[in-house]
Figure 1 (cartoon, rainbow, N blue to C red):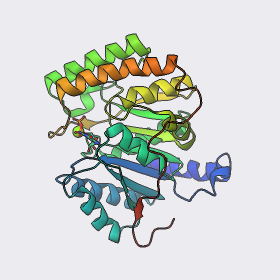
Figure 2: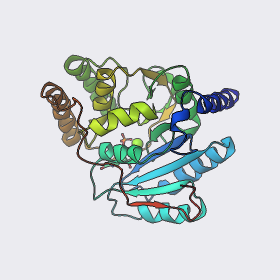
Figure 3: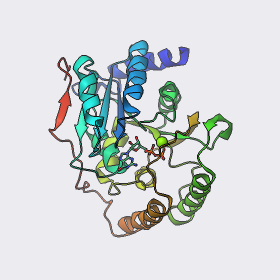
Length: 287
Ligand SMILES: Nc1nc2c(ncn2[C@@H]2O[C@H](COP(=O)(O)OP(=O)(O)O)[C@@H](O)[C@H]2O)c(=O)[nH]1
Ligand SMILES: [Mg+2]
């Protein structure tokens, strides 16, 4: 808690200093982006936890839920809670596009100086957020939650075949993309505004393979990425298909290599998920 308020103080100093040029953007310090696909069963509890937590911290924070073409009541839940809590916003994808598209769409609509994304099941509890913030405070541009830096922090492990799949994927990333992280796939990552606004517009991968692409681009553009051990309890109800999504992710690693070789990452922005107008806000939004 102490560390948290220290960080906020330093952010305040930075607000007056190095980041002063961004003041015109907003007085929102943090944006929390939550991609959500058919999350009707768990989203209400998640939002209650997240909103209560940021209220307790007293931070200037916005929460953005990106509805990824859900066929259930995901969007209704967000709209209902946003009626009474102006820190919450709903962003709608044009149909189901994937977690990568959702994260990019949310982040490119975010107004915070620091932008964090978290899975809707809060596998990493929101109380872990200060750990990522402290890594940014210490000089990282991107702080990524890691389940394997200190595996004992995992309160509930993924199934054995998911863990095995994760390890194989990690080795392939090392060989094909030269990414040397213990865990690229954790759904709990934070970015400085500058790194997010540089990298995310170039992101091409819209489904599960987007994390390695972001980390690949981070290295390409010289951003400092720090792995941070976070506690993690895998929640059931995964929507990942091991064979289908697994082979797709392998092809996506190859695509990242190809995109880089063919110059797709050299300067011009990606085509999809630019900031859009279809953003709904609560009644007393402070936009
Ligand atoms: N499965 C799935 N999840 C999506 C999609 N788009 C966004 N998400 C979100 O991505 C996050 C991770 O999904 P989850 O099923 O918990 O993945 P797992 O914990 O890695 O098995 C959740 O917040 C989902 O709601 C999508 O097209 N499919
Ligand atoms: Mg999950």
